[in-house]
Amino acid sequence: MKAVVQRVLEASVTVDGKRVSEMGPGLLVLLGVGKGDTDADLTWMVEKLATLRIFEDADGKMNLSLEDTSKHLIVVSQFTLYGDARKGRRPSFIDAMEPVAAKALYERACEALRQRGLTVGTGIFAADMKVALVNDGPVTILLESPPKAAAPA
Image 1: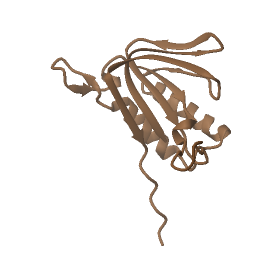
Image 2: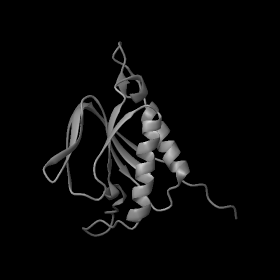
Image 3: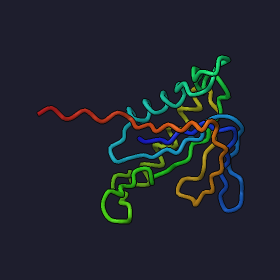
């Protein structure tokens, strides 16, 4: 799994002119699911998102996590994070998980974040979304679940 994590003062998602999610301070997460991603990747990503210390404490140091602060995030499915543009001019998305399985893993990730007591807004899977945000800092972190262990020879 891959994620672009942005610390925001506010964020919203609009689909077909209708606001489907909005929040004040928290995290906006663009989440991509790749071929071969498993429950282990989901668990790793959820833990990382909930506990990543990127919010400032009273001394102005990034020592607080989402669980320590607002507890709000919006998670937007983003298959284009698996776009490979190293060759040619048009990205290839062959490393993205197929949509039915990707949607299931994305929805389970959102539910796992809710189980941790976080307030989770979402977009609409596979919809044309308009995402608005006011980045705070700016603080933007790229996350990728650890590579799978190679099969024993």
